[in-house]
Image (cartoon, rainbow, N blue to C red; front, top):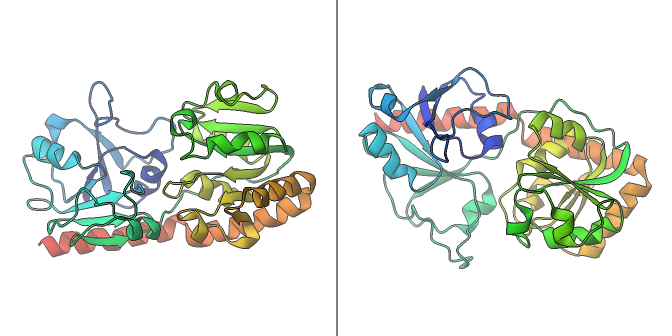
Length: 325
């Protein structure tokens, strides 16, 4: 199939474009949010093809993957075809509700009969009110990292994007308590200067801003344990990637993390003291950390393997295209 989709979420798209189809990625001169093109920090196969808006009307397209409400109008404007009417469409919902009315949050595409909403977690499906719009869940899948856990450094690793702006959402305010136990390495976008924002000395928190994925994985794997302190977010793929490398996890028991992290893989709790105790134990006991990391690796690769993810998506794409015919 020829599948049109925008480059929105790098890690998810990296997995998606590893399938057997041709993936048409809109590209504009400014490489803005609606024309970002191919990834530059993720390894994508050659079947992910950049395409400009003026090329789209004359390009055969079998299905469009939507990820933002405004892409409905953009598809019609660029293709001169209405998604869901003239062209099969699946809307991928990556996010938990954000409008402050949980659990009564109405999805912007609620009560539609022309498309399907595919949630990336069962938690998202549960918490979004989509009315009569058809929904399904396709669990995340990841390209298995090549890095393997060594845990040689008695430091704790975190991956957060925009930790200052998002603050309590990403658990940024909790980081100083963990920095008392071991130095923190924070990877992600817009993490520069985080130690100053938290009032921490430079030797307790080091920022690694926008590091390419393969290098980030290699560095994460050297840290003793992975911290996942998000209060309200969809399931972060960096958490699954860390587990797949064999990292033990210290995580808040919130949203989909409660289904993704088994007890043997580390610590999962809403009581911060429990998580602090676990971090302390992993730093002091490398053998215990390795044991939990092995359980994390097994769980991540069993549930979030790429083959399962792509097979689920192949089935869904076939169903939607066939139904439209």
